[in-house]
Image (cartoon, rainbow, N blue to C red; front, side, top):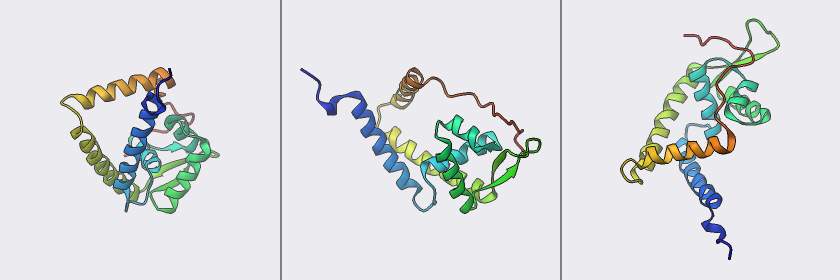
Length: 157
């Protein structure tokens, strides 16, 4: 006898991911960005200037998705394009003041979602779940790549 579809781990993880994504996107309403766009901006905030290709590798997205997201972020005034100081054909992306403020707001909104989820778990459950999910991700996908951009530029500021 096979296990019912809805009891399978892939389905349960999918449903949980969908619920968390929906709540997270609701928290971002009014900010004008998606979770993916906010994630790209957080990476730019933490790692400094990056090309779309570097962001795609780091964030495990297709280059087309990253290019589309960055174009929207540029229209919103969150990022600007800059030529690489040495490799002039490489386009780097940098957060603007608007983008930095948006990242701070987005981080606060995601912290509220983290608190909501943590409150639904038993004591110590959050850290245990995070550890288990990270272990599962590494087992299936490998560790997140260390950031070594193809066209490194030191973070300014």
